[in-house]
Length: 297
Image 1 (spheres, rainbow, N blue to C red):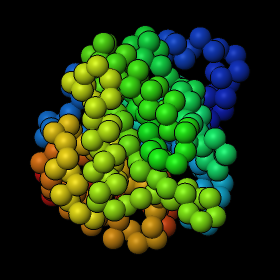
Image 2: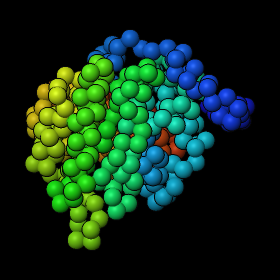
Image 3: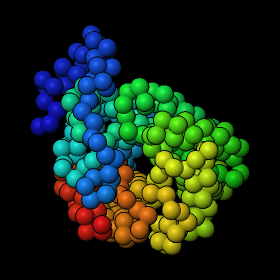
């Protein structure tokens, strides 16, 4: 068991009695010297979903609400030698720091989580997490931002502007800006639906690539496209996101493998698919994803 009762209760004790321990943990974290692995790939586990109120996995609408279970699964994933690090909101990152799980790991801080899942203002995705100054102060390795593009929703405009400023600010400090551009539209019922066609994805990539005063430190985080020519729209380094589990683990892995073979793709950022696999075996799910990345690169 990775998160024993003793470790769990000690985490709760420190949370309640020694809040300054978090800043000490940031300062003492042993950083990895390079963003990429020796094979010039990057494999991150994503855990910023709860901060946006996106807790569901399959039919379980609150799967990610149990924090002890989430942390246990993250500890299992991070223990795998092929996993380079984590992408998380401040609370999750700090809990992993207090559990001594992030030495020699890449840590990307999630910046905008204000577009709560299902909220009327969801597309106006305010920056409510890390900012560039905090990422520098806490010695993290970059910042990630979500940019959902909906032509019919004016909430896209402030999010675009805020993402552009974040890209500029991060570049000013020499930190990676990981932009996740996702084209969406509203269906007849008004629900948000991701547009998965090649033209929409390519357009989103080109919009995200042009944000800020420089693209020197910009990476893109995009879903594995069915049409791999979509990836020809950029020279920026790309990581493929895992998305929600489809119920077909083999199909999910196969879709990542094809995209990972493209020249601009450097790796994977996967959350629920690995942390909450259908059979509950996190270690095996992570191992399978690591093997796909190894074979593709």
